[in-house]
Amino acid sequence: MTLPVALSGSDVIGQAKTGTGKTLGFGLPLLERVTVPADVEAGRAQPEQLTDAPQALVVVPTRELCTQVTNDLLTAGKVRNVRVLAIYGGRAYEPQVEALKKGVDVIVGTPGRLLDLAGQKKLNLKHIKALVLDEADEMLDLGFLPDVEKIMNMLPARRQTMLFSATMPGAVIGLARRYMSQPTHIRATAPDDEGATVRNTAQFIYRAHNMDKPELVARILQADGRGLAMVFCRTKRTAADLADQLQQRGFASGAVHGDLGQGAREQALRAFRNGKVDVLVCTDVAARGIDVEGVTHVINYQSPEDEKTYLHRIGRTGRAGAKGIAITLVDWDDIPRWQLINKALDLGFGNPPETYSTSPHLFEELNIPAGTKGVLPRSERTRAGLAAEEVEDLGETGGRGGARGRGGPPPTPPSPHTPPPGSVARHAVAEDHTFSHADRAHPTQVKDSFTVRQLGTAKAVGVRNQAGAVSVGCSVDAHCRSVALSFQIVTLAGQNTHLNAVNLSNATNEHCDGCQTLAGAYQFVVSTARPFTLDATAQRKLADIHRRLDDLTRSKIPAADLKAQADSLAAEVTAVLHDAVAGAPKAPDAPAVAVHRHLDGWPGH
Image (tube, rainbow, N blue to C red):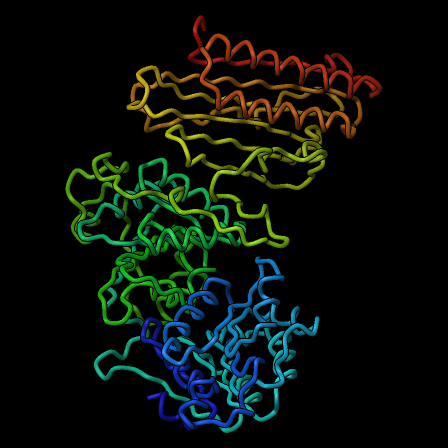
């Protein structure tokens, strides 16, 4: 429906359900408007019409969609040798500038990097004949409008403008018409498929408890006929943690979220497309437009924000006529949110059934074999895994930790999770900040964390926690063990008060049957008459101790030596704290620094 109108040069607003081929709907007309040497050779164009400046521009909201659209256009324009370049942030500027100097015909880019290069006079937009805003509702959202306007002001007044998206609210259409000349609004639906979702996608909605969701997802991922699966989370932290948990349960999983560097995001998507991992845990950064062949299951681990996000999420399966399954796990707190989504889309799932990982109807509806547990049997662990896919050196700019963030591939020393100088005592916010990672390159699963918590009581000034934990697979080592070491520093001001709020529980590997469990918790209570702060020297020393604690939990030394070294590190912490409070007024009837140690499972205890 779109092709005849777009090929005639008219402005187009194209709307269709996700997964129905919108990319080629604008891609083919776009490629036809570009003049290349093949057109001159065939007599369809004059030599003076050729230019090395870009002739067509596609603006997309996310980096992942940028690379995908670029690849699709390269494939479609291969016969005519159309030069297509992806321009987006997170990569080095130099290769993109060099490619622009050599000449390109079509540019696919994200607004930020396009504006950067255009502002530096590296990108010439004066020869653009056609503009496409893909996922137009996102691009023309009020938050993106200034960037879109700046880009449009750099383009020639006479051009073709096309907008394509699965969802197109009325307010967005009004904004779009301001930038277009008599646009034709085309909405494509099948006569027998009038709903908002694709008919080929079977939808299941379950009311699930947050604590049971990882087990529930692990069992769903073992359903008969399951191919590739995408699991969507609302927050970056949840995505990173769930990817780690699934990997510990034996699944080949990867993560895509905003805390990862661009190299790690592209590594995970490549591994997913190549089949090296078959479970991709992601935030909504991957929900728009990403097309991976063979995705049979989409799981909404957390309820989406609104109906548009829901449509884009479940649109990753059931694409191009294939069948798919979309499963949404709704927590009790999210029921009102889900009911709004259900009403907007008229889905008929207003009261999801209460479901647990052992519920019979879950096994029956999703075709999960009876007796399936939350750990993938070793005989079925056939995927190469994320570590088998190399991380491309993108010369990344800025970002959060370069090629890695939470849930990414293992870092190279020094570990980015070692707190920088000043981080131990600098935080004063009423929330937890936890950073964790898993070492995927070795059979030993390693986790470490650094948590800072501020307690909301007058007597408790702050709590600083430094912890590490390691779990060794029992089938690899007959003398395997699960180790947890926790160092927690509590500072009290005024009268010494016993803090029941401090939790010294230690993480252990619940799937390590028969493992020796070694848990050690060290609490350092600092009592002063008035609040005090650790100086830079003390902060650096504590950061160094945290790094060595992390190294210690990774080691395989005998338990007795491990305990001795932990005690030695605890003595160093005590010395640092004694020095730090030497000049502070002492609290009445309380030692300046009191150390409490709890050991569980160690030889002799």
